[in-house]
Image 1: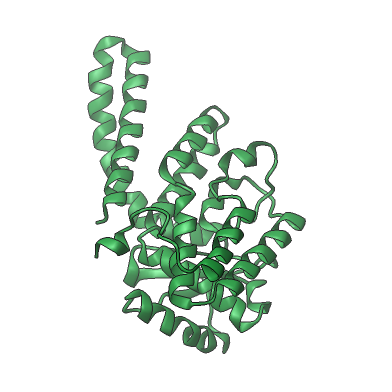
Image 2: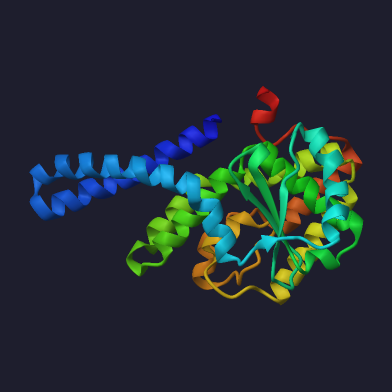
Length: 273
């Protein structure tokens, strides 16, 4: 288990335990703090195990994602094979399709060899090189061990955001769990190994423009999953945005072509292997 996953687990454990202590104090005063902490600590351990096991499945169900079974799978796997080889991923991710017209994608799953890449129906209308650039980004979310953290964070945020009084906690948890750096990191390695910064920059910009013009309805509490935020970005939804500004992402990607490969945004697990 990567150090980021351990840190994330501790954060989640602390959040649930602190909530139990507060409820215990409200119900039974000072004596309730201890009992509330112990009970919530044990409950949080069980909750974390269940979230790690079922969060990817909840996400697939939320977006009505189904395994892609038509002739397109072979073509997409041919695009994925060299990208996976460069990233040291032994098993090709499964490809699921989300019934959504806007071009977009996200990754979920339980690890490098149990990963799923979800593509929208709109993404499949793009050309091969555009799809390849999106896959190059998503493969490095998988390689950098982002997918399980993102999946659990998205589900926890969705659960908390379903209750108005817990909405601030959902926002706080989302931003404590997920840094915009993870997108810069996936862009960086995607370009470094796919060797095509121009196409990724153009594709990210294009998908973002479409997402702004035709946003997805609903709370953006699960927007962290997608390569670009597909939701309306005003009001409460703006609080949940963990993506760096698209213009800044595009500039950083283009700089890789004109200035050579810069250092990665932060030290990552790929550098520690």
